[in-house]
Image 1 (cartoon, rainbow, N blue to C red):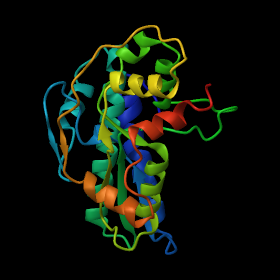
Image 2: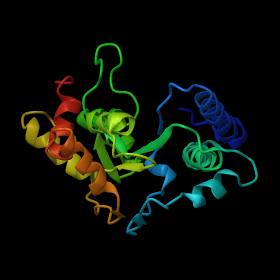
Image 3: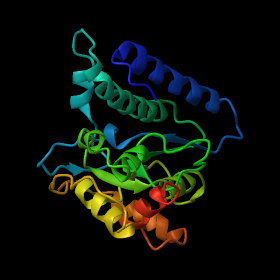
Image 4: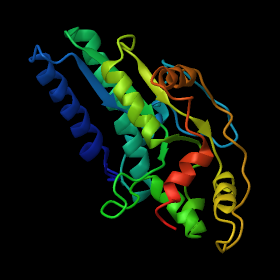
Length: 248
């Protein structure tokens, strides 16, 4: 993952690298499935106060246009370029699969904000988006205020959906939308306060509205989790607990 704001250094090589992998897989008869980790940003960008309808045909064309706008490439364009790379990589993968019709199945997984248990707290800590819950736990409100309030998915649910994409016989040619539920930082903070009532709190972060977007294919992803023995999406309360239990 890079936040380089120059699309020529991010989008172009990421697309080329993915196509190289697909071409290599096509030469190996033993490859049965190819699973690509995409992102919720490949489907749409959050629009505060606007409820979007996100389905299997949704692509984030807006962010691609923004990423390829003329220079200068300021730091503020870093996440835009990252999002554009996810959009273009996934779309080109599907285009390649449609054109070449290889012997293997292509599935993609589009995770929203990953939260939950760290794989190795001692060595890894809380990288990527799970750090935001750590920051809120530690009272670093300014860091959290700068982050989106969109949808979360527990990292273990995300992993299970990748397994489904790899081996579930009924999952073929699908975009799997790993969007559990919308959340707000104030909602996360309330969970932390309930879990650790004696922990000092620097003050309440501002209230916000839950995102109103409809993710049409999210129930399909939840159904896959149920087929894998889960009760459905991991709740916000449980994922926050797992995200913070090693911080106490």
